[in-house]
Image 1 (cartoon, rainbow, N blue to C red):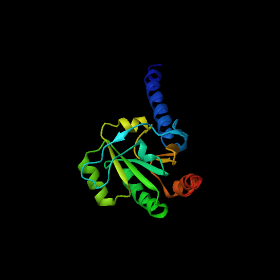
Image 2 (cartoon, rainbow, N blue to C red; image 1 turned 180 degrees about the vertical axis):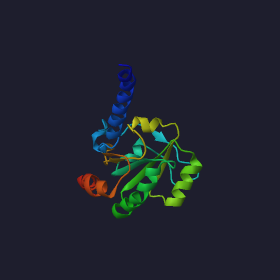
Image 3 (cartoon, rainbow, N blue to C red; image 1 turned 90 degrees about the vertical axis):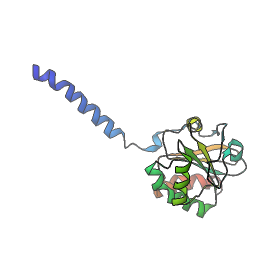
Image 4 (cartoon, rainbow, N blue to C red; image 1 turned 45 degrees about the vertical axis):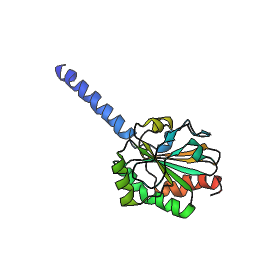
Length: 177
């Protein structure tokens, strides 16, 4: 009986670890955004100090389709997806804005100088307030905003070639890109 009482917490711990481990690799599409088909939140982001592109606000998202990417220099998956963002920009010419999430300006500048800057504007979200308003779970995340300023697509996690060739290109095609 004593061994059973000792083993019970251990069995419960193993069960919880198993549940969490198998849940970590779930499909990112299961994380639905309540902002899809709704106007982008109202915000104003200052430029990242030291970058040669401006910050941006909600009004800048109107008039043309825009890809909004939330990134940070300390984010390893952001580094992995960055060449794909540059490819999207080169192939489509879409307006691309970056939300620099909780990052020191000098680190963001170094990140973009090293990897290249595909963004037409980069806003500094040092306190993560705008990211929270956008429903960001973690970096990177990417949003497609139509010319009316409505969010029409969200990708959680780093973009992959498969995600771009599938769902993102389909969403872009829906906007005539």
